[in-house]
Length: 186
Image (cartoon, rainbow, N blue to C red; front, top):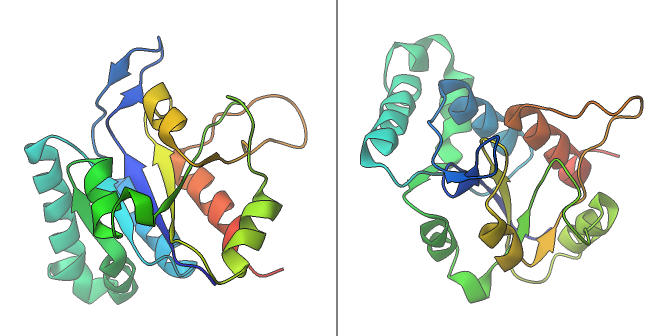
């Protein structure tokens, strides 16, 4: 199995009007994505945020779950957070994995933005066992900025409901579904 890491990007992402913005960190995203990443065997979970105060908040959340009272109350959360890496930019996440040329970048979107890589094909690529590590990138807000999507090696197909056309999953839910499709038991 090829190495797979995930990244949760807070900048550059879009707001509801399509402007590039920076979103705030949420406690639920920090530990819930870590739990999914650890459950499915991801090597790393990068929280990407350019603002020092927000990265410090993530550090405080991490410390709460790894060294604070919650580490004693819920030890499984401590193990989940062992994969968490806090970085100021997506470039830093790529650097931690060996640099842009050493990583295959897959991005996600809730809507179709162009040609996509299906989950079955992406899973097959991971199962080949050879090749560059893959970094699966999730955006906050209303999704990743166009430049991030355009710079990626692949855009994964959107997660679609079987019935109806409502599609507004939380990033936590979308991450869990994507990881299950890529790495879950068959």
